[in-house]
Length: 157
Image 1: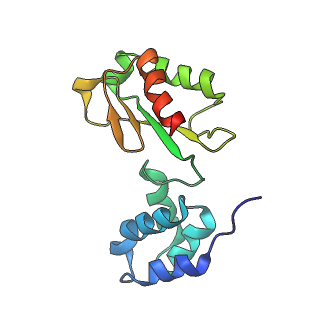
Image 2: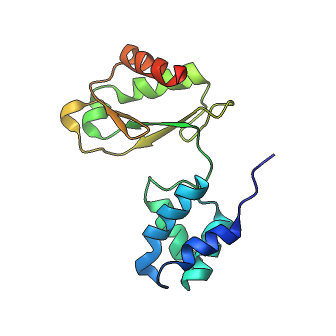
Image 3: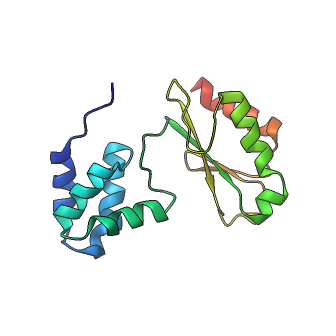
């Protein structure tokens, strides 16, 4: 059963900022920190509180890859697929995660809620290609074998 979203908490967070677009990104960050993601009904509530069109909120949430519209796992694995990383084999890492965790595609989360896989267009760390970010920790020059070894640490806690 899905967790109920505390809309009063959303209103409280959004209401603690000045109305208007200038507060939007900070409000989205704060609400996502609280809830873990930003579903459409939450986006609509933020729009109402800030007094801006809901389409503007949706546009920001879908433009920036650090905002999420659905829950993610305890550990978020983000693979860079920018040019340098792609050339150095980042899609092999994606394929490895699909095989290991049974992911069907990007954005999938394991059944146990432990891991979510995402792709980023560029981390700006091309000299370390291919790059994987796990929970904000950058791992460079990744291979399938290195990735499996790194993931063991996260699996073991």
